[in-house]
Length: 98
Image (cartoon, rainbow, N blue to C red; front, side):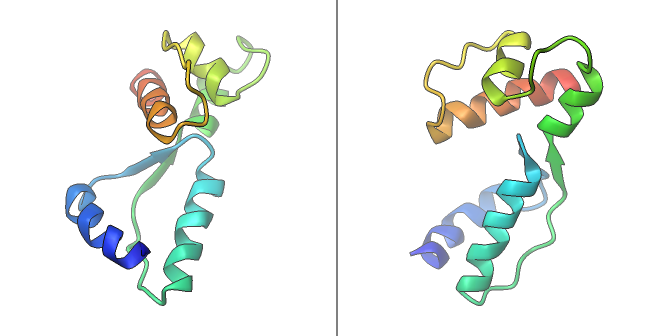
């Protein structure tokens, strides 16, 4: 159940910014689950590697999908859509674009 899981996660990320490749989608999902469980959403600083990679690599890539940008940043995303693999790819992109 999300509230129980969140109690374990929250102390690990408290005070840290969140980063996603397509912030709008991920943040909306997170806010939705908070609403569903009637929990107050902590107003995290949230950064988007998709938006930032479009600025940094604007004419260098055929598209800005996670695996394309990750590859351009030197990360081989071999298990795309696995949460940990996608998070690692996003982290590698963030290191390059922020």
